[in-house]
Image 1 (tube, one colour):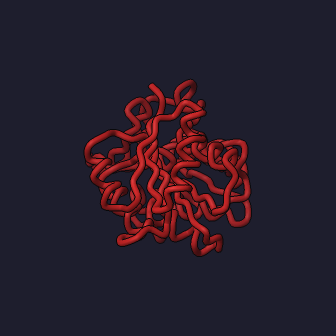
Image 2: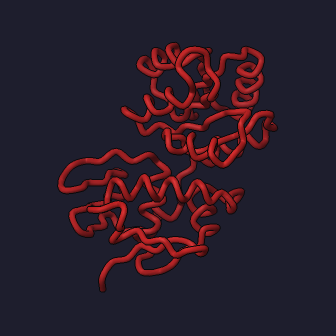
Image 3: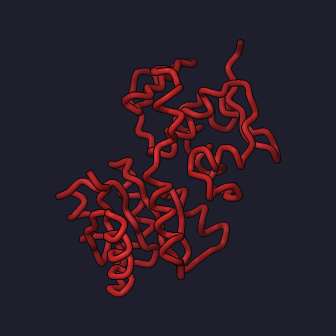
Length: 229
């Protein structure tokens, strides 16, 4: 089945251009001009990805993103005219998987959509079905993470990043390698993505996220998942 995408933007012309491009690539689309309508459609239908504008009337896109995240692991790509590092971090902190700056080209947007929908090929083919450490269990087939027996919600990219690191224990993985493996070959310099996602994962699996035991930072190089031999 083709992926279904919810386009949330208050400008009809932008929605029309995006819809045309997505349909031409085989995606199914639904539109909403504001967050309230988007929530209603989201309750009625299942979506694989949301394209969410930051500057919406009423509830902002950042607030809407956080609200979607409270109850779903759907992939979310934020659309915005702002392009500072702080803006990117705010979007990622709100729960976005990726960030595209307006004006953007359709090939760029389509590439970002595909990157958010892709799953790391390594996971299905080579990784163990269950990884255990401390009070954490990672289940690759169901893509669930249990912490002290509780099922903790992970977004698709959070899970992919955690699983990849946890299957390469005690090895420093460079930033670029992580980005290209988890997000795709077009990525490599988006260090803010890793910083935010690693912090999000630490809050979910580490006994003390401020002093991590497992997911360690290697300054200026990358990250290392440490398990005692």
